Length: 107
Length: 107
DNA sequence: GCAATCGTCAACCATTTGGTTGAATGTCTG
DNA sequence: CAGACATTCAACCAAATGGTTGACGATTGC
Image (cartoon, rainbow over all chains, first blue to last red; front, side, top):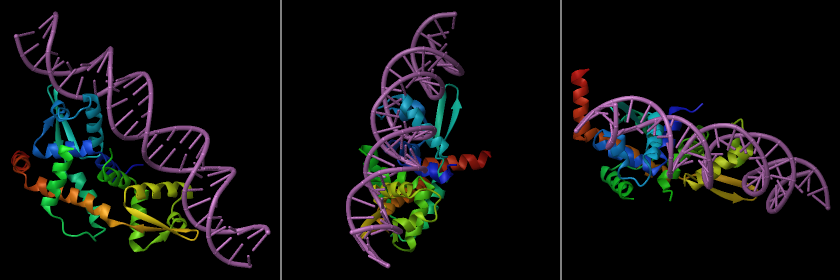
């Protein structure tokens, strides 16, 4: 029986999916547009989106023939709380995260 | 090519491994002692420890016939930076804020 | 020396992941 | 209605996970 934390962390364990989440920070996106920057099939992206949805990290809403993907940051909060339980990390800086983000999106 | 972040998050996506990390917060432990509270074989725990080691979350040092497991918080720190930054980034993003406002006004 | 202990390895199994291609479904548009 | 578009489904594949049992190589202690 997989907990939410299991599926959340597992979903984050793939660079493609983390990139998708970063893209969705900007705005909601259709599946086709999510897939556009990646060099893999639409079906592969569709599977990634299913995994992200099961993990509660995004939600998908179909309007007409377009399925919109929306970031759902709540699931991340639980994972973040778990991590903070380790409490021994130095101060978190936003610019450090932005370097991560750039690296993820460019790689 | 799996980044460290990939293997770190993937390693965290299992409750047994997260429990092991929590145990190692207290002190370094031998493999047999790590396995003791779990209802699974020693070999299964050994595999979990290999995954945690590959992810950089722990290190293992053999002294005599005992292999000691030690928490290595650096890998966790990187993952934590990613998540914390993600949350902050989302919180301050204008579009996200506007969506939040729309939701509040309509619902 | 010999037996117990520590831990991994090897083989096996079922399930999931991460990808492909091609067909199918649903929806818009001309 | 016909065709284009958006997305998933189905079948397939290779590799990784998560678990088992049993054998094995070190190491320790009597």
